[in-house]
Length: 197
Image 1: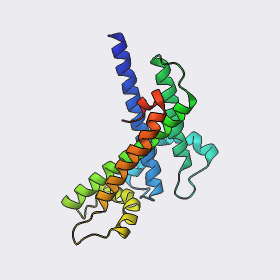
Image 2: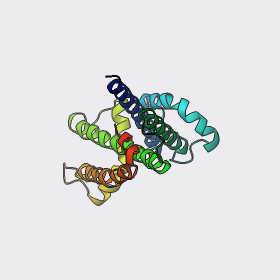
Image 3: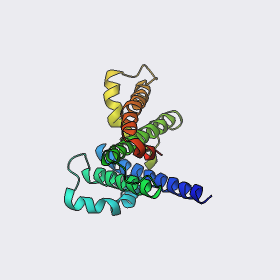
């Protein structure tokens, strides 16, 4: 019973850490897509993640261009520490450094793909029910997915009222998830068990 409670507790901790990694990657992607910084949702994401990111900003510097390296580094270090700590507490001993690095990279890639996956679903639903929505959440979703949708639309323009680009992006997300994240997760060994939500 005690060991079951312990493993449930570790599972909960891992899930909470993965949710925080999700928020850090959302911050990273909002910056990369040049989404509205003053949008209330953007502000909330920055507020929640800033305490963890601030120490990394002091030596990696502020955001340069589109890519916020401090946020990426924060996510990587938090996940690496979590993998080491959880495996130690669970009795697996010290995880191989390669496994920790690959597991952390897989968790970051997994979070990025999940954000795009959910954002695309929201975008598709909004395009059906409220195409002109001006809610801060709707605007943010559009700003987030536009950089990955625009190149696809240039290759596959909409056919009248039907836009096939989301289907192509969904397929790409599935392929990247299966090939890249799957390979990293398998290569990470035991650390790979702690990758996704």
